[in-house]
Image 1: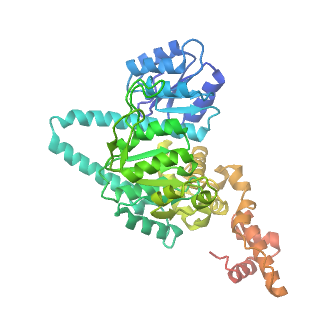
Image 2 (image 1 turned 120 degrees about the horizontal axis):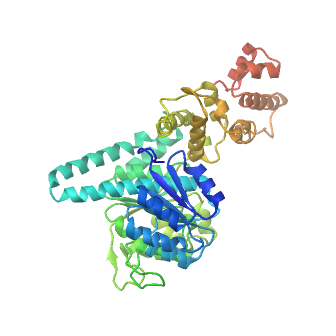
Image 3 (image 1 turned 45 degrees about the vertical axis):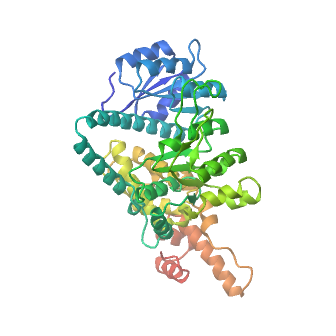
Length: 482
């Protein structure tokens, strides 16, 4: 069956049918998924379909995943190649990067959200690469027109990643963070962005890049926690052919690719002291030496690093170099978790609805009041990333043009009176008069009951044996009206 033209095609190659089914269930909402149990069947699909991304198991009977993807690279070079394996053999990884030109190496057991995000990025990378190839061809005959297009694209990028696009209400804790980030964007200093996973650190870094004089340059991203030291050095600094076993070609590192632009190093707190020393030298000297090279390469790169760790504590514990910390933390920005900016949940949720609904083939969708109340009552340990997953799930399960609370997962609905109350309720005072202490207990009971009933005053009043007027009076007394 020919897939709809609007959906990119993903080919899953795995000799285990259960693995095929698991990946199909993860991907089939966003992609047209084809499956194959081996190389021969996969070749038939590739000959018949324009495949955007191929996910291939490494350990298969007959031809290995890397060997097959090497053939794919030669015959269908536009197809983005991803290897999935339950083994962490560094030689296999290096061979995959060099021989098969793989885009990513995913280890089993894989996480559905990570797999879906990786495939989305791979499909987008393929589209962008095709656009770039077309632009390169046009460059030969239409330089003025192409220059105008590049300027328009840059303006669209600036608008897309503008600080005003970081959703928040007036008075949000993010206001101060964005104001400082926007001011520092114009100054060519290294920046450290701290915050829990999923709070939007990369989005803030992109906004800084496009508000900086380096906006016309590349914004390059690397997750330092995803690779070993050896692979991370090769990826960032590059390597020369023959530098190590499996290095069959020269590899240009991300520092060189980001020359004139910005390099975003995510999860820098996970790197080893040995790698930190190598990185420090690059930042101090402004030049990289690819692995196996005899000459250094000058680079002009602004580094924005991010971490969910307390780097100052890791410095005190001897796990992070103090000199590197001061090199990357000329300015430190701390992105607050979603539970500390609950007023922003509504605008963020509505923005996510507007983004997710068209991607799932839906028209405009609204958020019901009870649904918003449920979102406000949950503490969001996974922050905006978790909120996006819940919104996507709710849109997929909802009919009509409104999303109700029932479409959210039980984790959100049942977690309201648990972690949310624990995180947000006031702590009982250890001193004060009896009346003051009783008031504190009463305020906690009111908050807990309102959260559990998703701020439905009629139900909360009935449970507490109060009238609605009496409940409103107590809410006003304890500052719970907002």
